[in-house]
Length: 134
Image (cartoon, rainbow, N blue to C red; front, side, top):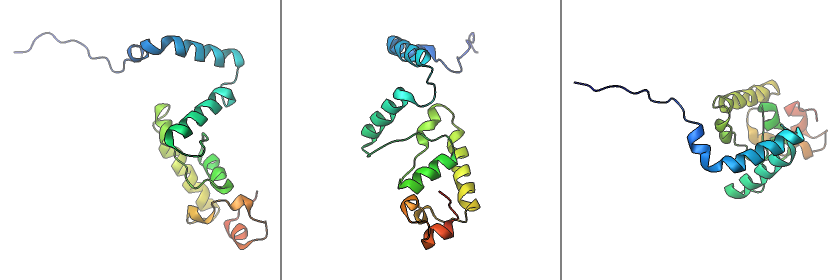
């Protein structure tokens, strides 16, 4: 025999944020009044704090595979897209697919071939083979 049923909430967003409400209100009002929804000082502060938390030299947000490749060409030896799951769980797969497609389009088989390539003179074999125009 079963008793009365009660609905189980799918996702409670209000409850966990109650203890942070004052901080979140200030952060939201700061972003809203500045009009800087992309980039800006709040994003820079997050990137610096997250890099420190991860114990790495730097952290830069990426929105697509081309952004990730640009960072690799500039010398980033590691690009992680895992934290985007907080915003859009499918973004991790999308960014990795875009990066793979961009590498294929440029004829690049391994990322290790292009780390720091942006710093190489234009006439070097690596630059010619990658098809990268910077």
